[in-house]
Image 1 (spheres, helix red, strand yellow):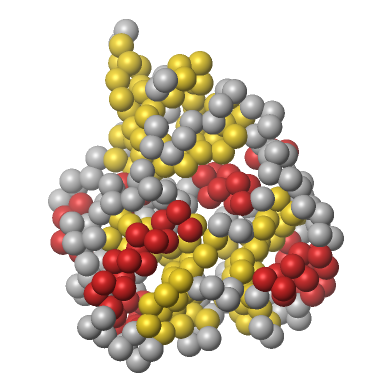
Image 2 (image 1 turned 135 degrees about the vertical axis):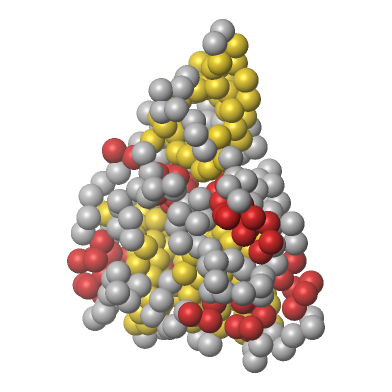
Length: 322
């Protein structure tokens, strides 16, 4: 396959019409066994019982105080629930799920036999149809094509996840004959689409609404009890939440790291305005950030990166309403 090296990272408007992404740092937590659904239902924000084999759900896994370990995409595959996410958030979530899972008939583990890739862009579905006789869509976002699971992710940039063995994934990527970008380009798309991806500085720091999990339909407010529900409900019904997830862009020589701070200008002074969740820097210098800021931040506010004051930032409109 034609792998575009990690040193070649395009700006969002420089991406080709259709391309593939190798998701080497993407994985999933698998839950199987007799109690898998009832157990997971009591651990996460989404309604697991409402999910069938053709559906995709978003959700968050929180601690007892409602602070988020991970935000995931949930599907069913081979009689298991798969909580798909970046590996950076997986270990903390896995440890917590396993801790309480010993009291249920459920096996909880990181998937080791599955690999992940993505096809993205305007003509992605046409390329899929060259290999598969079925493709997912808005009505059936998850389909099984022989051993390969295909997942449609709606958004400004149409995306399709491919899940199978490493050998099969490599065969598919080769057959597409498209440029294959590294994992960072997936992060760029997650930033512009407003889907939160947590790494160690952000784990166990935010309630779901601060990460817009409600805006991506990842919280059920009528499913019953789950870990952290009291905090999540209070945020929703008492208007306690004052923060939200935003996408920003700027330019600079060095991409700010997750866990760094964004400053906002107030009069003649600069004050802390928020925290960086994830970042991406194109070779041409464009920087894209995902950050938690005050939810009433003005689009005309002057924003910059703390410690790298030359990087001024502008908000990017997200594809959903807060």
